[in-house]
Length: 175
Image 1 (cartoon, rainbow, N blue to C red):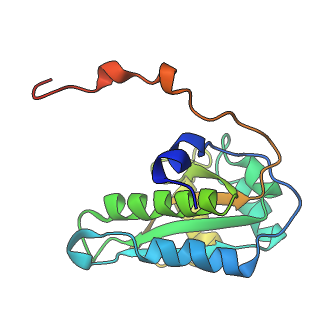
Image 2 (image 1 turned 180 degrees about the vertical axis):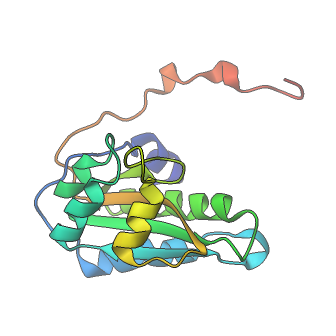
């Protein structure tokens, strides 16, 4: 097992995947990890939609004019939603769950990429969120935060170079 620091150092956004399905046991680990993520007052507002059908992934890839098209070639997309009636910090809780899924995927030697949904538009008349809500029959009380694409990487990304980290962004005691 990798150390957390090594996982963070090596986790990069992957947008190209091998034409290989992600095994069900790996999907189960990724989703169970998300279910263990912390949430405010243990409200657990998040819910996840696992999508593996090629046709649905292609439709989801059209949710935005830019930045989502690669989902059409992804073997797996997990839509991260949250019940906005459970807590006012649903966005934070859902974001934590989403990154935990990405870290679990990295630990399983899978690549992943966050596709922003909330606050984006499909076109001049349709939000990305409403498009996805209609496509997947998501109830109105649920916000759609993002889609996490996951698959076996078909591109190589170098780990972060520790010498190029912005250490000056770390302050001690005061800004």
